[in-house]
Image (tube, rainbow, N blue to C red; front, side, top):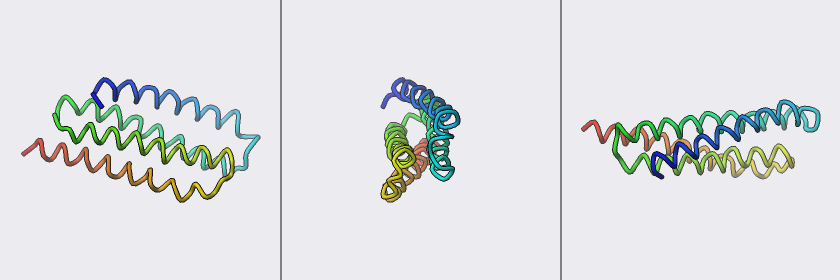
Length: 125
């Protein structure tokens, strides 16, 4: 992804995250159990944090010219879709089997952050 694409994607991810947070607080509070609402809130938190991560990667693109940053952005986006997406679906449907999918998104987050660190390390040498 280019820096421009990352910024656009991050802004949309963050916009959706804010909406999802509001929906959880106002629309789902009386509809789903407190446990499933906590799952929803976890999905929102990770979506917002990693949406900001996408913005950070875009900003770093000007400092560290590395294809690793582009790959990190793609992995971070995949992590948001898999991690938060699986939790959103689990919260709405109660499909607990999705709990086996969620860690794959977490692994994508970890790999993305590792790539950011590696891009900075390699550029500094």
